Each structure stands twice: as C-alpha cells, then as structure tokens.
Length: 180
Image (cartoon, rainbow, N blue to C red):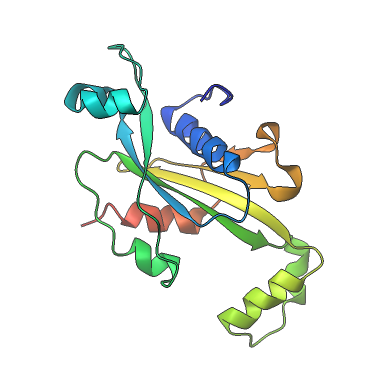
C-alpha cells in the first residue's frame, strides 16, 4: 500500500498494511483474520496467486503478504474461535484486526463489582470516558509479535501506535493457533 510508512521489520510493515486496509473499510467492522505468508515463497510457489495479489515480480521481494481469511463467526466468542484454528506450514504467521471499547486506567477503580461479562460490556459502552479502538495484532510462528492501535477519535495514519506488547492477551491467543 502506497501510504503505509516504511517500518523496520516485515512484521511491522504487515501490521501497518493491514491497519491501513481495514481503516479504508471504515469503523464498525467485524473482526478480520489474516494469514501472513512469506512473499518470496508465495511468488515462487504460487506465481498466479502472487500476480492476482499484485505482488512484485522481483527475486529480492521480501516481507510478508497478508491474505484475508473467511469471515469470523459472530455467534462464537473470539477466543473460542481462535482455539479452533490450525495453520498449514506455508503460513508464517497470522494477524487479527478487531474493534473494541476501552477505558483509561483511571476508570478501573470505578468498575462495579460482581458484573457478568454482558453487564460489564454494557457498563463500559455507557461510560463517558470510553474510547473506540481498532487493534491489529500479528504474530509469527517463531514468537515474534507486533501490534497497531488506532483510536477512532484520532483516525489518521500518523496517529497509529505500534509496539510488540500492546495487546499481549490477543497476541498469546494468536500464537496458540500455531501450537500443536
């Protein structure tokens, strides 16, 4: 993608590319799952698919190519769905883009006790300090991880926060999809 800033690692570039792609679809989107494949391997083993994806036909083309997977079922909790995934060997990693509501740390002390998951979600949705965030988290088979966070109120490519440990729980759930 032409607007994706250059990043230090192929994994960071892939996360930012996915963030830009999902951002172009607007907000209020379902969760989206992506396989990450080695671009050079894809070009060598599946040239027709690589051409359809518009991948460069250069031997030095390196990096990771995100390939969006089928829709994630909405009738199943995300963690349960992720537990059903097993990737073929050709997949080097995976990524997930998901929107959530979050509260600042200062709101933590205000959370009423004894709320079940549905009531807690409703409480957060009604909280005046809530913020909508899109989280894009990617992991590789070797354990590398990267995340990109974009707040709805600061929806700009220059306002995307990246880091390897921004959403550790989701990164761990994605990493588990590669364990046998």
